[in-house]
Image (cartoon, rainbow, N blue to C red; front, top):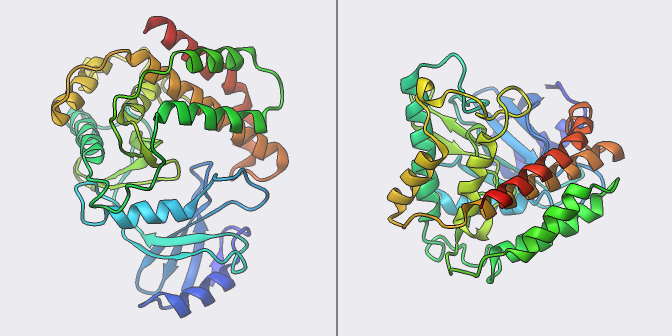
Length: 343
């Protein structure tokens, strides 16, 4: 039994799973996934199969952040639905086992695309994967939350009002230096919150192509991953999150489509993706889309600020990369201001 990362007590994990997970045959190796900045995630390999473990990061955390129990709950609720998710096996909320709560789930065998350009893939794959991404998003927002037992997964009321208040509070809690663009964006968003239109659905909270897993030799989605920010809220937040990423530059950090000749790559325009989504849900065109886009830039700026602060405090999943994220906060805030101006 060995580990390629020293932040996980693999002996404690092994002992716990032997006592609590049916069919578990003993740990051979534990390897930490290097992607992601939220909940540390590990591949656990046994003699006959593999599992994935997700845990809260160590250290002092913001209240309600890194809620692996919520991830576990939503994954369990979606089992057998039209939204593909990995099977979950157990949740351990006893922080005395490894120092924080964790859950164990199925290790999906498929492929992920780091960014929407999907470099090296043919146009048929690009078109198929993005269309599947659109289909799964529409299915997600059509989940019957009462039948799934998720009607209390998020509070009632205006989702954007609640989220802006929450992320403003968390941003202020992790604020290091005064950022004028963020102050302006927060004030503008608070002033322009749309009236509640009573759309109340399950939302993923971080819906983008690299949080989807596709079949190895096709474009069918076999799993939507990373549900840390999921709640009951407004579906346009998820939809605008996709468009937000696409408006960023391509490459390692932006992973967007800004300046890319989409038509030549078989990729839809922003408007085309939104129109396909509306058609699948049977809803009219969306008004004031710039607000929803600006909201996503704001929330992402808040998330990046939190990652940056954890790096300064020594609690980041990838400290070197996390420290660099602080420089992106004013950039995202400016994008949000621009989206509002064009709404």
